[in-house]
Length: 168
Image (cartoon, rainbow, N blue to C red; front, side, top):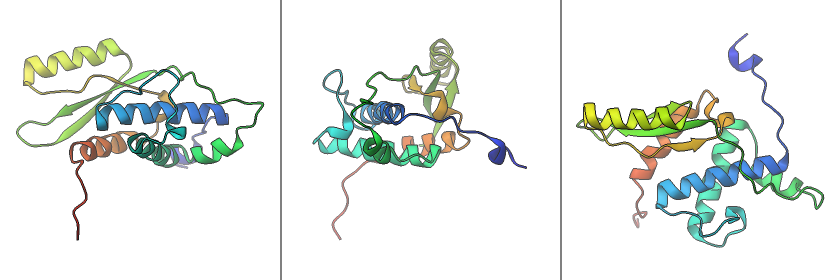
């Protein structure tokens, strides 16, 4: 039996799924568009902003890929008795994106705490002259998924190649 077959996925409430997806959308907004949510309590899934909508859709795709969960289904499951949980879950890992040497490669590194992530950034700059991202807080439930590293690297590579579609 493989690890995949024996691994259990914790049950999450619809409110938790929505709040985790909102947190992921905020990380995407910050890293793709270099923008923070305009105000506390900003909800990507309710926004009319095209960038926010794009980040919400990406976050939904990532949630579905990594956790087999559809946040849009969770939205429809939210009853009036269960308001959306606007508090973000306590993240327990930190992701740092590092540039490659003379190439345009990007690598992801996951750390248990912010201090270790910051120390890695310092050593990357001092010992290798590599640029790194600020530590990105990631919920453990996402970081523990076997495909997370590959997905995070794909997102980072996609973010640096953002462009307008060419007209055919």
